[in-house]
Image (tube, rainbow, N blue to C red; front, top):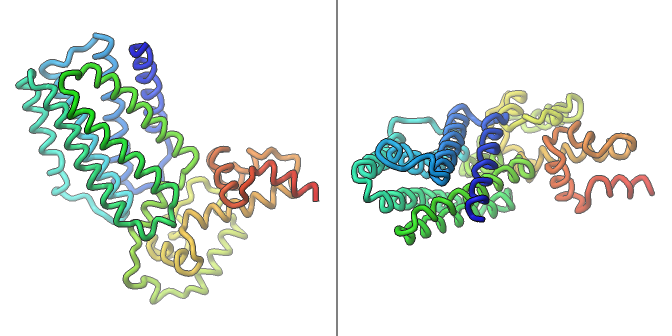
Length: 338
C-alpha cells in the first residue's frame, strides 16, 4: 500500500512542479531564477527518489553525489529565495555562493564514503533545518506587522514548523533510510499540494511578504511626493483605466504607472489608506465585482471574478468572503431580492 501511495505521490508532485514552472510570475529577475531553480531541483529529487523506490536506480557513486547535493541545495535556495522575496532591492553577490559550499563538501564525502550515506543524508536535513530556523526567526521579527498579512504568516510558520519536524525525523532514522525516503516523497508531495493550494487561494502571498518585510518605516520616503496628486492619479487608474483587471498587476508595475518607486507606493498605501497594497488591490477588485454582480445578473459568478482581475474562482471566492463573509453568488441573490 505504501509503495502505491509513494508512486502516486511522485507522479502528482512531478506534474504539479512542472505546472508551477510554467506559471506567470511577477517577482524580480533574481527571485524568478531562484524560484525556478528550486522547482527544478525538487522535481529532480522526486524523480530520483521514484526511480530508487521502484529499484530502477541504486544510490551509489555519482548518483549518491547528485542526490545528496540536490537534497542539500533545497534549504539554502529556499532561504535565499525568501530573502529576495522579502527585499526586492536586494542584489545577488558572490558572498551568497558561500551558502552552497557546505553542501558540496558533504555531497563529496557522501559519494566517496557511501557507507556513511545515512549520516550524510540526515546531515543535509540538518543543514536545511538551520536555514529554515534562520528564516523562521526573520519572520518572527516581523510579528509587530503580521496583522497586515494574517493568514500568510500562519501558513508560512506552519510550513517552517513542518520542515523542522522533517529534519528531526531524518536525524532519528539513520537505520531506516529507504523507509524515510518513501515518507519524504509523500511529505514533499503534500508540501507541493499546499503550495498549489496557496497559489490558487492566496495569490497575494508573495507580494504581501515582500511589501511587509521591506517596509519598516523609520523615515518617510514621501517627503518630496505630492500625496494629493498621487491620490488623484491612483483613483484615475482604478476608476477610469480599471488597471485592477490585469491579473499580473503588481506593486512594481502600478508604481511605474504613478512614476513612483515601489517602496514609495507601499508607504503611501500603508500610511495614507491604512492597508497593505495587496489588501487595497483586492478591495478594488471586489468593489468592481459588487457592481457587476448587481448590474449583470445573467453573467456567471466566475466570469465576474475573472473580469475584475482574479486569476481563479477560488481566489475570487476567498477574497469576497474576507470582505462580505458570504459567497459572491449568495451576495447577488440577496441584492437582487431587495
